[in-house]
Image (tube, rainbow, N blue to C red):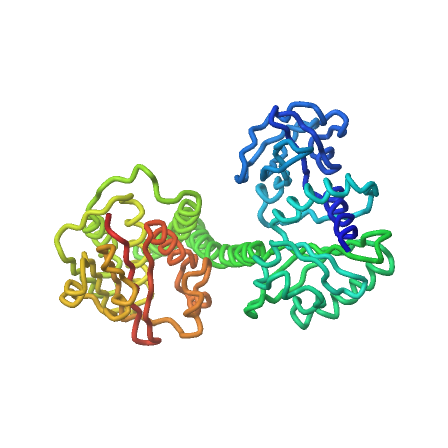
Length: 497
């Protein structure tokens, strides 16, 4: 069994899609696997004994940029561990080509291991191979399993436990199919039979199940280990994040198709009406038509600004050079900006702030975005003659919480830790349409608009996602309560320095 494991370790290293090199303390390359030759477009004879040319830092993942012979840029993630090589301390670096993932998130491909046996049978070399390959096997980010011809698991690496929640001991001698969602098991069992019978590799996507019964998307590859009793190596790579990205992309395209096209079409049609029939239109009709066009352009601007704000928040977290500013003044400015929208709908927009000044370290623009999105949402989703209450408070302890005008106090009491912090708490309450209970879990997801998606109310579904992104960057959080037909209350809190 030990010899078989060693053989399979060598297969893993020799057929890995990742480049694997050993760098001596002098900075020279001592070993390079076949994938490294492709990565640098140089044969291993040239790579060995040449200067690696990049700094190797143990325990960190470093991004490298390699200019290839065709002048195209190749982006590589390098992970480094220290190991012994012929009794000398050296660095083992794993190089993974992540160019496509960096350039196009929608094109997510994970290179998989293709394993073939090429080990020398000499005993003293086997021991050395085992030591080196064990480091690679144990530091892989993907779950790697060794299966027999019946699909029974004989070996699992540490990443498997991190990914699935099972220990290696729990899963040994269990069938691979027990890790796969029941609807996909026949598909995988058929694939294993095909790999065993033909020796051809297999790659596909299935739904896997963790020990706690949660499911997630994985990319699975099966490779036959030749001349080794029809064993297979199974590589499981978590692609659930990329599936989320794909869904977000589809939602974004759908939103753009509906929400952006409508105001553009309206503006064009109204302006075309003026251009073609100007002489026949009364001044009142022209005024009405121009206002329609203006409203469409304003809606379009709001949509574009929402997308840009969300992209900006995704690109940069809270700045290190944060400065003190008064959140009360920020709130006053936003209310003044949005008051006209509330007046137009005959809504009562009121603010209650205690005390008069609340200073926090950060960016005024961040809290401008937070207030603007929460208050404009309340105005937008509240019918005419509704009421909107905005509250801002500095909560230092339970006594201050009891005496303030905030609502949902019990929820706040459970969320805030007064032993370590005082808090800035903001709240926006409306008497609007409310949120259906079935939409509670997706309120803060990008592009989610619930029932409003099929209404005439414009929006991107990014506002609340942006708000949560910004608040979390200040180590805070946000919650809400809502009833359909009665309104919603959004409450956020941020610890004060």
